[in-house]
Length: 390
Image 1: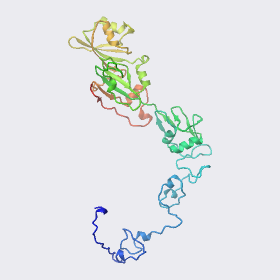
Image 2: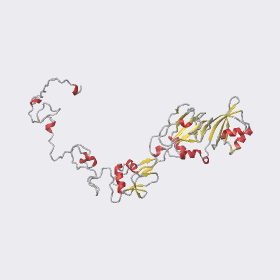
Image 3: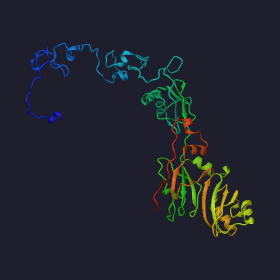
Image 4: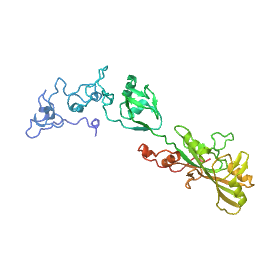
């Protein structure tokens, strides 16, 4: 029961003292020391904290608890509320020549040879250009406000030039404080790669005058940047489609000079004879130039339908269909099952996507593993997700 809920008509009953005491609390003389909860009914001088504690001296040797000692604005003694007073730091009493206040505990103190008195700052790794004061504060050399003051005072330089407030630094920039080089590393940015199983009836475009469903409607929303489709698939072609949020990686996967194989599963009406197989492997002249398959494998079939797996190193518009049509053959189904080293997972059903594992992304982009670079925990691949159906 709280104090406000106690009955108001409870009679007052003075507590009696312990044996050997001076009587009840009400019998204490006026003006005498008032005992607390622990010393009720005890004689004066026995276990009474209020009487045992010496009175605070007028000169104020015992300081109240406050944050003044933490910021170095007061000259505190060695009282109980001042742990710093018992062990003064090496920078105690050091002040700027032009400032009446002592330096904060995190400020770097210059040495006669231009170095820094504090220990080596912690190394930090970044993947994108960052503001200078944020990078140095994260490295543990001082607070952001202090660093801004050092920038104004001309104590920080970037690539040999005085730094500016709000300036950004990136890979290749050399930051110095009082002439000492700061160990700032910029890690390569690890892109994000999506593996998508495109179904039939979707267009690989953001805008379609006909209003057909687009693959971009199924993808997750990025906080920064946009999705780039690696290659294209026809409206009636299904299978593996990669999406990345990095333009350099997308160019590396799509440019013909890298010669990444695309493997397709093709179902046609009928079977190929030896003459047709040799023609597809040696090359067929199309409207936009010679086209040929790198490999052609017979995968069998039932009835009039027959399956073949073909690979080629370029991705011209409707190239696979046009090559078979040039021989008078009809493609009833076309599905991409592999793009370079990436194979369409069997667990990924049509209309579903999943994140590629970080280790596989680094291998695809030619980057070192993130755990070797920054010590971060490896991010596991996300489970496949199914977006809204059309």
